[in-house]
Length: 66
Image (cartoon, rainbow, N blue to C red; front, top):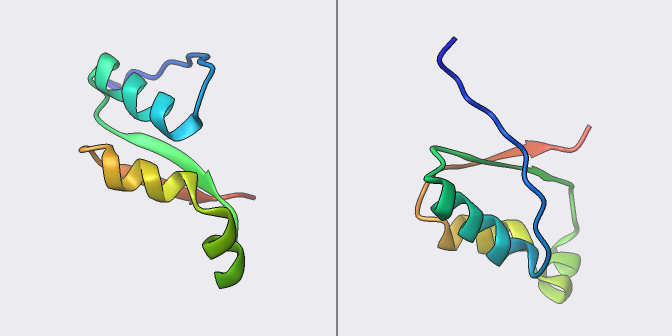
């Protein structure tokens, strides 16, 4: 009770679009899935989730991919 959820579809850079959508919707929380990467993989590929966490300005919940 009292919890609202919705889905939206956007195109573009994932981290930027997610943060922008959260700002436009005045979201209370951003929820993203994460998968384990090696340290080298994180260094070479970067991390969309890290970018979201650093730029969101609101809570981000990272849930392991099941």
